[in-house]
Amino acid sequence: MNGLALGWIYVLMALGLTLIFGIMHIMQFAHGEIYMLGAYVVYYLTASFGLPLLAAMALSMVVMAGVGLVLERFLFRPLKMDWASAVVGATGLTLILQSGSVVMFGLYQRNIPLLAQGPFNIMGTVVPKDRIAAVMAAVILSLALYLFLKLTEYGQAMVASAQSSEGAILQGINPNRMSALSMAIGCALAAAGGTLAGSLFTLSPYMGLVPLVKGITIIVLGGMGSLPGAFIAGMTLGLIDGLVPILFGAAWASIGPLLLVIVVLVIRPQGFFGHAE
Amino acid sequence: MQNKSSLISPVGWALGGVLAIAFPLALSSIYWTSVLTNILIYILMAVSLRTIYLVGEFSLGHVGFMCIGAYTSALLTMKASLPFALTLPVAGLLAGLTAFSLGYPFMRVKGIYFVILTVVTSESFRQLALNWKSLTGGIDGLIGFPGAGTLSFVGIGQVDFGGPNEYYYLTLSIVCVSLYILNRIEKSRLGFTWLAIRETDKMAGAVGINVLRYKVVNFSIACFFAGIGGALLAHSEQALSAMEGASFGIMTTIYLLVYMVVGGKRRFEGPIVGAVVLTLVSEFTRPVEEYQPMIIGAIAVAIVILLPDGLVALHTPFGRFAGLLVPIRPTKDRP
Image 1: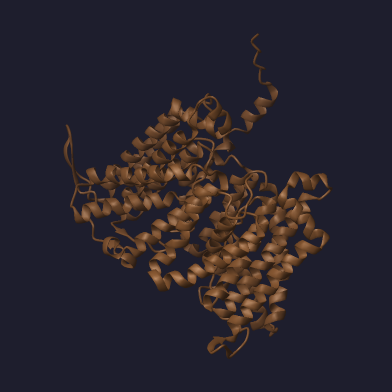
Image 2: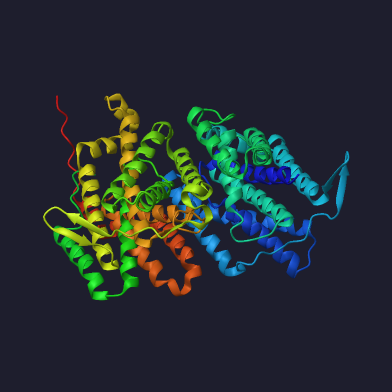
């Protein structure tokens, strides 16, 4: 059950990353730090202002969306033309945010309230309720993103922009507005993922690295910029994470997904569901 | 790129050399000598990282090959008790050979895909060093392998490199020779071909350059020197750990990239300047250690936005102004 909950949290990360990559063609290496900051915002809202968890999570998503807008306007938009500079900008941002949060929040591990308490009985197996709540929250958010992209005018504009940026511009879609929207949505999803992970486990300034690597793995496997690919690859990776340690031991589980990425990138660089450039 | 003369004049190089030789004697502190040794090693790492950029790729996995070199040399001196003079080139060769075998699949992808592959690779190497307990000591790491020890030279005889100052001079000479080799390669026909591939790889392929082979050779050469750097680091610290926070973690790889870009990725001097300046910045901000990555990161972001060609481009605003005044003569079309 832990594996399933974590798998869905990684999918939230991957959806944000793939949205940003699909539209801006930037690999957001600081996405793990956004995830971590989102969790800390929730921690302060619940601990200092006594907000209920869901309200704090919603507010944190709004705050991180705002951070995303600022980052897009002042850091990534000037660097969008040159992928190499964007890599350095994103890694530099990682250093700033990570050591900034070490300074501000300290290295103590903190906790935010649980999503739900008590066990839950499904067909004879006992499952903790908070795991189920986390999976449900992640599913609802992914579904909301899907409906937004499918049904609204802005969502369709984003899909068009990801498919062909020139074509979208010819249709009168403002590319900068689409970039800003993708950063805002991506950061909000990362904040939600961080909150869910924080309520299941603990917070620390370094909590963002593992989900970032998992998120990158997922979007490489699924195809960069492909949303259905991210779903399927996320589920596959969650399954691997759950089964390989039991079957082959922990060492292989840490290297397995990395080997998978190498094989996939070499044989099919566009991933399972991506389309060739 | 080819016809631009070096920014730093021969006088400048000579001055740098004299300073590098005089510093440990002038400072006469073991701590500063070890800092200077580390600076030299990171100069070699950053310059060889830039070699990969000559074909237009960024590697975030350079530290993985450093890791290979370090463990190779340490294990060979420890378990097979071979002399450092032999383990150093073997460390480089093993890193280079690993890069050569990985290069064929890796260099088929470009840009951000290559970056992801390399970062994944270096993390795998680190995980391997962490989990291969019987060979690498696992979480405990390796301690107690010998330093450079006594080496014998033809014509000079035996020289003892056991002390920190002696090891510094050994590192200085190895790094200088390596930099000279890398510089000569860049100025040679091989380097010229690499630049052609970076500018337009399709065109280079169309005129008969085997793009993949040249890129693999490039990757192998760069990683050979990363292995040398790793071996130098191993025998300088005489202790190795593959933990996340240690020398082979993802932070080091980011730092190397930042050294190269802040110094200036378009010039050979760039990574040298970047490594020296930023290592000294880290050294002098040691009292506020928790802010160090923030400062380095802020410098990196500022440089990327404001000065994309790095610190070495600061010398030439006059040059750019002169370029505006004297328009470039159009080349005459031959009939």
